[in-house]
Amino acid sequence: MAKNLKKADKVKEPDMLPIMSLMTILIPVLLTMIAFQKLAIVEINMPERSDATQEAAPPPEPDDNALNLTVALAKGYVEIWARGGSLPKVFFREMWTFRCKSDNDTITYDPSGFEYDADGVVKNPPKCQDGTTMDAEKFKYSIETIGLWTLLRTSEEDPGVVQMSVYSKTDSAYLNVENEFITTLSDVKPGAVVATLTESSSRKLACGQSAPGVEDICVDGKPAISLKPRSAYDELAKTLIMIRNRFIDSPDADNIIVIADDDTAFDKIINLMDRARDAGFPKIQLAVLQGG
Image 1 (cartoon, rainbow, N blue to C red):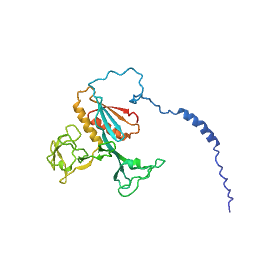
Image 2 (cartoon, one colour):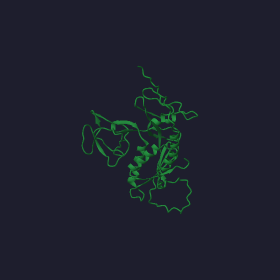
Image 3 (tube, rainbow, N blue to C red):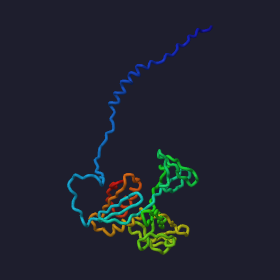
Image 4 (cartoon, rainbow, N blue to C red):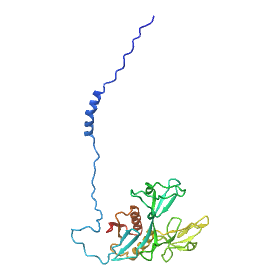
């Protein structure tokens, strides 16, 4: 006999109004119980601009024995001052080296050759070794290094000639026994005595020989050296080492002041500071170049 089947009642939707009312009450309560992170303030004294007005007590009398070594990094040149005088400017050409994502290779360009539109977008973005053109808006993020190639200039109007130097397989510039940069590959050969821009680095070159005071310059029987544009950082380091050795007894022989424009790339300042520290000047002060 057939049974009478009762149809199930339609499921009613739950009433969410009480839950929403509860959440409306809980959220403000929970927010008031959150322990927000506390911020600490650390007071530091930054170097003041050279054109700042000083209202404090007058400065002490200048020490005639003080070195007062200062290095100014300006647009296109580096200049060194010491004891009220200055050394000849080291002129350079700034070069940007990019790392391409397309072939993972590097390319080097002179940034002065880039043209930009009114929105600051480059019109002629650099091209990679495989012919790929880099993104016009993002190519600056692919800069791997900012190089400064030393220039020999005879006048302000002279565009300059790039100076070349021989570099080791570890990318160190070679100096001869007269403490001058080696500029020809033929001078770097087994038996030659050379040095680099580090303390007590004089060594004798050999091929296939490893011994104290001897540097093996060969790979597969051939000298592993290269002739490249001389870095202005190397030129600067060489001069700073000479100054350090000559004025080692000065009361401020460990001090150096680095001056740069407001818009100087941070990478260049860091490189300059590293070279100054390696040359024996661990106490570094930063200042802003007047008119920068």
